[in-house]
Image (cartoon, one colour):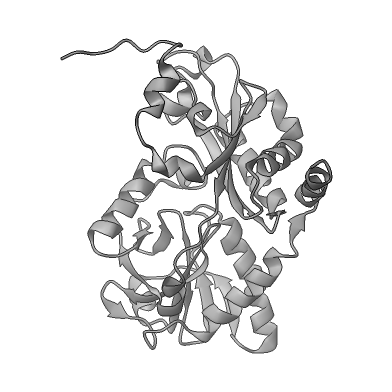
Length: 332
């Protein structure tokens, strides 16, 4: 077998020889190691000896830019900082300018509808498990083109199954670390079963969370229930949907919104089930473990919460990115 030597001189020529169509959605990236931003997907790389790569030693958060405005930025950054504290990861010096860096990277990407992933890493240093081999933590900001789910999934609803995979312990469930192997296996499990989504059960047999989604269950008693965040990641979108649901209570559309234990049997008998997440908003579930949920079609609570969330997404934001867009357009 003839193995060619890769050098600095032929590296990019080698990469260009192989088609990578998925990178067309990678708009821009900031890396603290470079102290700069690139729009070239070929440059969106990090060292193999970064603990983020070979140990999953880091944390991240994922947020949305809606119409050029950062939605719930404060809440996402607070959760990211909680993750860093939880794994004793010192924030990089550049993190003090995180809002400006996110805004600049989004603007460089050139699209007002996008996803932003901010990753904090222990940093490069060695291939050992010792985090003290990494002298300086690092930060990476990736901006990805936002591609909404097909409208048919919202019009017709999706199928959900119960995951057979063991749930993370409470400590790891409440940290948005970069070790997402269980989450990836849950997604694979769902697709292999002919569904798009799965939900894990906690040690007591109650609903917990999906691979990257929180779940809400509308009971026939008029109570909208969400699993406790003690055993699941505190979802930013789920928290916001919960707050918005209180408006439905005041209108008399539902009786109550609460965090509660939810058994699979209670979910089977629900009038509605939906999933929530940064990239999917509110997504209706019409079949769970082969059972029809409610009428078998997206219900009125899902539709009401969707309307409230979309309205909220255009109002609950930080103005920083909008100002940067204006500055960027004036400079053209």
